[in-house]
Length: 396
Image 1: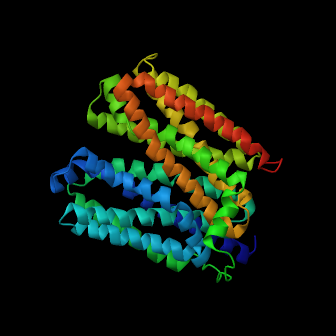
Image 2: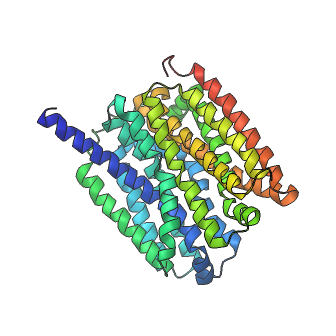
Image 3: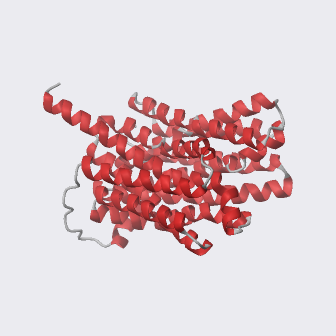
């Protein structure tokens, strides 16, 4: 390897590390509320519904803003958008820490959610631009780890803080540090060429292709399955295993963290030529079968928890596979951020529908009824995965 190529490779790895770090910091903004919820309830005299809105607002904005924010990335550049997103988190976290009313605090969460969405769309766009085609599967596998990593870190590190405002200031500091790192080390986006088409025309070009739409549907079904379980996993473990709230939190953090293993394995399998639709279908079937032993009282405590780990690991194969498919199925390179935005809309649709649906059926019919929702989503995701086979080249 020549000196120049060695330098380029080192710079590329640093870029990937910074982008993944941006994603992790973005996901901390979701995980921190779950840890700080009791302190926030005391500070602002909130009920559980209000606490729920602090997280749900991320999903709502992601559902509405996916494609428009993707269009923003396409027009102003991925690096600049990434910095905008980090800046929004810095501002939102700082306002949140200084909030004297719930209204101001909720406004700060809106800013954080805007930052989260900008980062989750711009981050993959940076990777697509700077990482060579042959290395993208690994890069996107690393990127897809950001959500479980950030949430698990929040669950583990959160209890170390005695004041919720310190958590918020820490998040602001981390995001500000990454603003500097992004500005200093990530290669500037080339000046975008004047866009001759409107956002509406670009949107139609994306949703008019079956490939991007099917990717988004797969993400929606996966997100529905994943959050259908993990939104209620601590409660399930406490009821099924009789553990304390603290132990249930630690076990849930472990189950969330092992999702990272699946993300990394996806990169491994994809670089060795495994069919993407087959990998997605295998993961969906495994999640559905695992759910049978999780939601039905068929096994003992240890076996039930091990099935939760299997559910999480196998599910991790899906995000990396879907995200790394965007450059292939986007109508053009310029429209890839819009496809990424469409995927985020699918993901957030599942995040909204999954917990609400499963919570309703559990309240009405008990834990076994949740199995029906997850199995139906698994079957629909499997059918969607096989429908994707027509969109991919024969070697993918």
